[in-house]
Image (cartoon, rainbow, N blue to C red; front, top):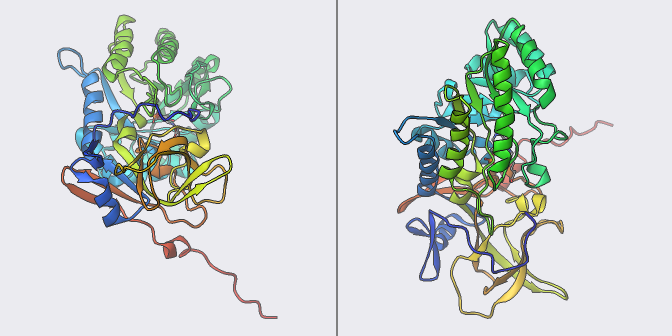
Length: 438
Ligand code: LLP
């Protein structure tokens, strides 16, 4: 994910965004019109791109006879806007949640609790209570201590707790270290050699129902082989558990399938799903209900961040293109040195130069793109591509900067799915100390 210093990197295929006569459109609306109407920085999503991505994934979950082999539980951490999750719910998605907040979002759009799996390495007691009371399909457990806590809390509430253990299969997902989760040294999951023991322990607990097994090895993974390695290891566990009389109903393979930001070539979704689902069938596990938890691969390329150029600043070593979106709006470049395509919203016939595209935040890590060849002038708009996943959701108010508005475009219509924050909102809940009476 190191930002390559070449402008020759191809643009990703974007279902919802097209360039027509030199101007970029979100479906049927020029991005420039949206920026004019709603201001910048602005997140813009294409509903059609989201729907297409979901339907392609969902089709891949069916076999040649149209029989369902797997279900999609969208990992809403990638983008939890209510409009996004509601759209996916209506298409038939369940959800993967990692906090009480995400659970509340899912319930607020009327998601069926039996379509919710609750993951996360550090669930609090109150989050576990919320999940149990809501009646989620499964709590994905990441340690013995958590298992014991869930058992205790279920006893207090007077319910049974459906659980899966999250296996750490110790495979290398070959991705950025910050988003790799299935290695022995990661904080995630239960160490492979401890899993059987932990299931045996779970089977003895009074309030626990073992329903599944879970595994998530990382994110932005661009080859299928680490998934196959993890899958084989997890199937070995399921077989052993069966011999011991512990039956597993569902197999959750997590998310993590990568997308094209620049030069990545992730597997096609049908090929990816077939490879994994065929392996499950070949090894005699077709009876298992299989779950995928994609996030990025559904929404990543369905969104862009539109930003305006404040200044062009020639420098001794670098030219800077200073824009009104910063690391607080899109954190991925600063955090992972992630590459995002960046294009002028309207092509212009001016002399191109190579720029670092940087934000207004007081940090040298505040950049969105490096060494990009752009033909632009002050006041022009840029679109940062592939910003639909882990964009807005990771935004912060650093430097007391209000978070951008989010717009969803559906054909010729644009909907405000989140209003731009007002500056006064940002400190409305803060207080100064009472005056001291000295
Ligand atoms: N399931 C679990 C248990 C996860 O932890 C994640 C992502 C997913 C599913 C969805 O993974 P996806 O399909 O979106 O790759 N902020 C980082 C990505 C962090 C991913 C965390 N877990 C980024 O911007 O690249």
